[in-house]
Length: 319
Image (cartoon, rainbow, N blue to C red; front, side, top):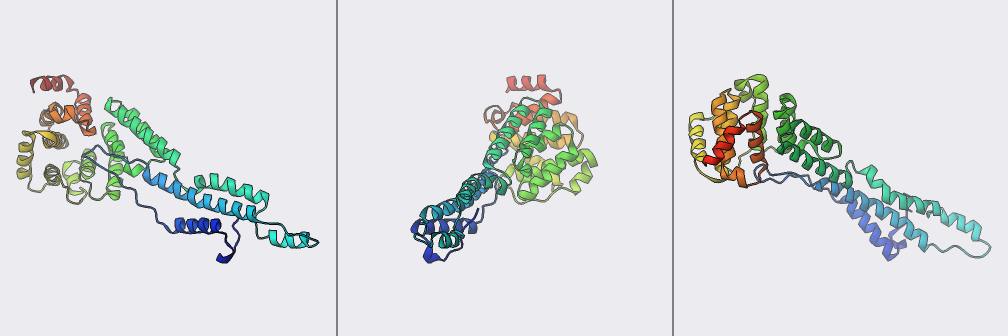
């Protein structure tokens, strides 16, 4: 898009506003992408991608309108000097072809400037939600495929923690560990991603080696998750086991998360009976039955995939 190089005194009021808008948008930094969370019920809305696309559209639209404005305000010279002076003056302004280019550029250039357009971000979010639904239905392989498609469509792959969970249950432990490590790089305070990295690596390296390599993260605001994290890291194991067993005998989200992670801890240590007992307790909890938390669905899928479904249903009846 061609923009005439003119002094500020030569701008009309409209041009000045467009020029200031363009310069302000060029100087404004984009906010970093963040993920919101409520336990594991979290995700991103494509806000960062949409912001990129909007900023690019603002830049290009300003340029295009600026060029059109100058073209519309131009008055051709009169008299015998029309051709000679007109050619010289018009050299500083867009032709009809230039105006057309400005319009097209203002519409199309954002797609080239922005790595992820708002439309593709929306598609990625839709595919991510479809993947979550497939996982809830126990179709783990299909969920992985949809999460991969979401990443290809522009959803930030390092934020696809759901993909890491699916990879764990698809027994693609190396890929799962990579996914969770990328997640922690983006959010160094993510306790659960650190734990799931360790769970994946325990299947590849053994429990003790995976514990040595466990990612260190910031302090979790939830007491129960601080105990879980310390347990997996091997910090005062007996004390943290007692804390979690006490929480698992309580109620609410703490009961569910304590029981679920006690089950996952036992599975990592190849203690299948303890793993089954705790996971069935997690699935039978009131929180799992009523919260709508994605991790409650995960616990149920875990029980189904391990072949414990009938026992899980019986536990719900007894509750």
